[in-house]
Length: 474
Image 1 (cartoon, one colour):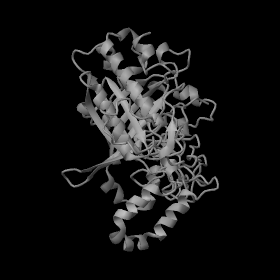
Image 2: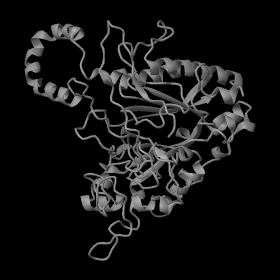
Image 3: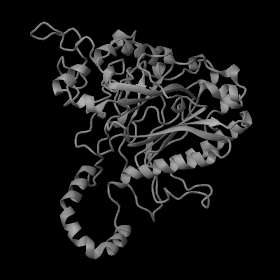
Image 4: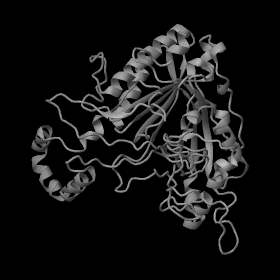
C-alpha cells in the first residue's frame, strides 16, 4: 500500500470554530473514466483491472463522534426551512450577525479537512476526488529556461503547501482574499511535466521513455489547442471558492514565466450529498468507478507508481497521468431505454451490479448466459471490453471530474468527463485498454474524445523540497 498523503483535521485556535473530525476516505477511488479508476477511457463502468470510469471517489460516510451527523443536520435544516423563510425578511441583518456568533456545527468538518503537501507521492492521486476540480496546462514563455522553471516550481510548491495546510498567505496584501474565511476543504494541488518541457529547459537527456506521444485512436477528434502543454496542474477541493483561489494564486505566481495554454473545470458529487454513499455516478447516470484498483491490493503500487529503482530516478514515487476531455452525447444516450443503456454498459443502472447478477462489487460472470442462450453481458458491453482478461491485465487508477460547459450551437449539452487516469507506464495502462475500446466498445458511439495530454508527475517532495527539484537540480 502506497504512502499517500492523507486528509487530517486542521487544528484551529481557541477563538475560532472547533470542527468535528473530518470524514475520512475509505482508501478506494472510483474507477473508470470518471474519477475512479480502471482501464477504460470511456465514461461507463469499465472493468479493466480497475473497472468503470467513475466520476468520483468513494462516498464519504458522515462522522458521528457524539455530535449531530451531517445527514441529520441537513434534515433539521430542511425541516426548519419554511419557518426560516417567514422570518427572513424581518430579521435578515440580525440573522447574519447571529450566525457569526453561532456555535460550531458538524458541517465545519468539511472545511477543516487538510491534506499534507509532502509525502512519498504527490497529493491528489489516491484520495477520493473532491467536489470541485480545475485542470490546466501552462507553456513556458519563450525566454524562460531551466532556471526560470525551477524558480516557478519553487513558488508554486510553497503556495500549494500553504493553501493545502490552510495557512494564511505569505503576502496578505497581495492575496486575492477569495478564501480568507475558509478552511482548506481537502484542497490538493498536483504538478506534472509534459514532453515539450524537457526540450525547452535543455533536459532532453532526462526525458522518460514513458512520455512517448500517445498513438492515434479512431475515436479521436482532438483540439491541439486544448491538448498537451509544458506544465500540468491539477487542483481539487470540496469548496468551489477554495479551488478557485488556488487556481488564481498559481496563475498569478506564473507571472511572466509561463502562460496558461488551456484550462478545464469539473465537478463531482459533494460529500454528504447522498444518504447511502457509494461509487460516484457520471452524467449518463451510471454508477461509475466500481473496480478501480485499491491501495490495499498487493500490486496497487507497482501498477500506479514508479518504483524507487525505476528509471529515470527523478520519477521515483511518481506516476504518469493521461488526461482527456470526453464529450458525452447525452441527448442520443437519453433516447435509449433503461434496458438498452444497461446492455451497453453491462451493469444495472440502479446499483451498478453486473447484469450477470450480484451487487456492485460482484465480479462479472462473463460466461453466464440467459434463458435464450445469449451472454447476459454482451460481447461489446463496456465492462467486458475493458475487463483485465481482455487487456493482458492492464489497469489504471481513474480519478476524473464531470464537466458541463453550456450548450453547443446545435443545442446539445457540451458535457461529459474530464478523464484523469494514473499508471506507472501508459504502455501498460491506458494505451492497451484504449486500443481495445477502439475496436469494439458499445459505449464508444456515445463519446467524443476532444482533447488529450500525457504528463510525468514526479513523486511527492520531502520537507524543504519543491516539486520537480530532483529533475531540475539533480
